[in-house]
Structure formats: structure tokens, C-alpha cells
Image 1: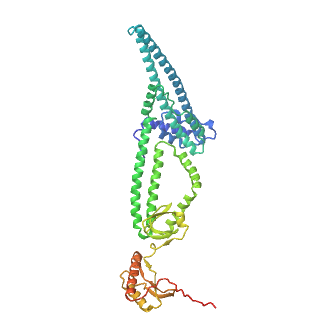
Image 2: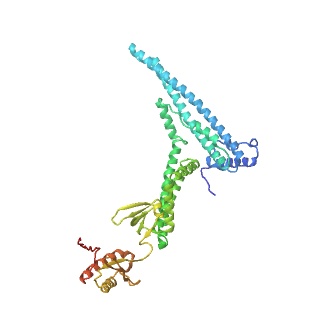
Length: 466
């Protein structure tokens, strides 16, 4: 059991008595059979009030809400009377100042010294100013008291709303009376009002404390997100090849952002803002945004499918949508390819998932290098094949298994084409491709094997005219 040191024994006794009174009332079917019990002590703490209204049904909560609303209305009536009094005090101060100014102006014209009448007029103005300041302070205090009552009314309304009641009429009234009307022409009253609000427990002090809680909550959740992200990253990295780098990054990112969003919601609620309507508004707006951004959502869905089926990973060489390059990064909206000449290509995920994906490196440790070499019809084909076999088998990066394939492939228009297909590790593909091509050219030249180029023979015939 938690014990709040701030709750006095007397308050606990009163709370127990109030709950006992609510319990005695029992469940009733008619609103008129129930008497409000929570308003017997208007100074009750909000947390205590929340527990008192917890066992009440909808009918009882309506009675409680009416009782608290009556207190709010009574306090609003006092505020209105005080506002009227303040208006009168302002007029009296203005009149006193005008009278004092006129008297001094008259004395200056006559060349007289300050008289008793001037002193009395000055003292009268000061008294009027003091009375006005007291009224402003009283008005600030009354507003503070009303804000406290409204907060307790809101606690009852929240419980009423959870149990199927309609709190809208009450909140409409509260919204109509809320706010502070300030006469900016009266600088002294405005200053006193602002200072009073800043010092008020229901005004500046409350919002300063709530703002402090807001910042502290965001900071705590940010630290928690960083720790959770680091821990999750360590766990998914241990998964090894079971998860791709894209999946690992996605898991860490989605966890981090989820914690930050949750922290933002909790922080907003710490400000004293009811997040229920805010979440409902976000949900309604989400439907409209989803309809307007169908293409974006399609990219999002395609990004999820790519993460689930793992056709490629960061660092793989792929060809998709007519573009080839190394996968540099990917998010739920797009995939970024770095071309071999160092150009960045951003491809929407919808275009990636909706087209054929060719992955040259990601799903196999070995690749076959397909090479075709053409020799002239007059060249020795057996000798050319022997040269190719020697070059391939002596290359240190060519794999012995699977064995390379060297065959006469076709008799083309201008050449006899030989295929050369060694197997290499995926990372060595281009090294072997370029090395073999270079060595074949040098060895063919050295052995007198002709590498033809496309050519056409044109035969001209001359016909004698008869």
C-alpha cells in the first residue's frame, strides 16, 4: 500500500466518511433519489475525487456533475460581480485623477502653492487606486478558485464520459466562461492580473510545473528510447544471417520511434491536456490523409513486403526498374541505389516491389563469369580453347569446383565464338572478368590467333551491254 505523507489523518477520515456516504446511497435508478456527496468538501484533492467517483453509476455522476457545476456557476457569479466592481473602481480612479489634474492646473494658473484641497484630492486618488488593486487581487483569487472547481468538475465529467454519459453541455458552459478579459488601457490592472496569474496555483505555477513535467517526460522517454534501441540492436545483431541488415535497421528504428511517440503522448497528457479528443482527431485526420496519400501508403506497404521477403540487403548489387547499383539505404518509402559511377538513384518502393528484381550478390556466395571470345575461321580453335583453359585454371581467384566450362559455342557470321565460364566468389566477379579478358587478348595476339571484327565482303560484277 502506498502512503501519501501529504494526506492528513483528518482528510483520510473525511474521505472514508464520504466514500461510506456514497456506498450507503447504493445503486439507484432515478437521479432524484441520489444526493451529491463529493461536493461536501469543495477543497477536496483531485486524486481523492477520482477515487470517490469511481464506484458511481451514470445517474449518480450526473448528480455530482450538476453539483460541481453549481459551484462553478456560483463562483462565476462572484467573478462577474467583482468584474463590475472593478469597472466602477476604474471609473472612480479616472474621475479622481481628472479632478486632481484639474485642481492642480487651476492652482498653477493662479500661481498658488499646493493647497489642502490638492492634497486631499491626491489622497483620494490613492485610495481609489488601492481599492482598485484590491479588487484586481480579489478577482485573481476568485478566478484561481474557479479554475480549481473546474478541474474537479472535469474529473467527474471524465468518469461520466467513460460510463456512457454526455459531458458536452457541461464542457460547453466551462468553455464559455473560461479565459480572462484584460483591459490593456489600464496598465496597472493588467500588470497585477498577469503577475497574479503567474503566481497562482491554478495559473502560472501550475503551467510551469506541467511544462517541467512535459520536458522531463520527453527527456526520460528519449533516454529510454536510446537504451532500448541500443539493446535491441545488440540482440538483432546476434541473430546473424537470420535477419538482413534492412530488417535489423527497421526493427531498431520502429522501436525507437514508437517509444518516442508514446513519450510524446504521455508528455502532452502531463501538460494537463485531455488527449482523448486529440487522439480521436488524429484518427479522423489519418483517414483523410490516408485517402489523399494512396501512393505513399502503397510505397509503405511495398517497403513492408520487401522487409518480409528480403529480396536484397544493404550492400547488394541489384538491377530494378532499369537501374543498377549497390543498395545504399532503404526505408519504408524508398530504396536508394548508388550506381557504379557514384550517382544516387532514389526508387519508390512501389516501383521496386512491382518490378523484376535481379540480385547479383545477395543470395549466393558464388557466381559464374560468362565470357564469349570470337576467333577467326582460319584460326586454330583447339589451340584457342587450350589457351582459355590454361588462363582460367591458373588464375588464383577461379574456383576449382564447380569446374569451368570452355566450349565452342557458335559459328557466327564473322567469327567462331568460344564460351568461357569460370566460377568465382561473388566478391571476385569483376576482378576475374577483367583479368581473364585482358590475358586472353594478350595470349591470342602472342599465339597468332585472330580476333575478328564484324565485316562484310562486297563483290562487284560488271556486265557488258550488248
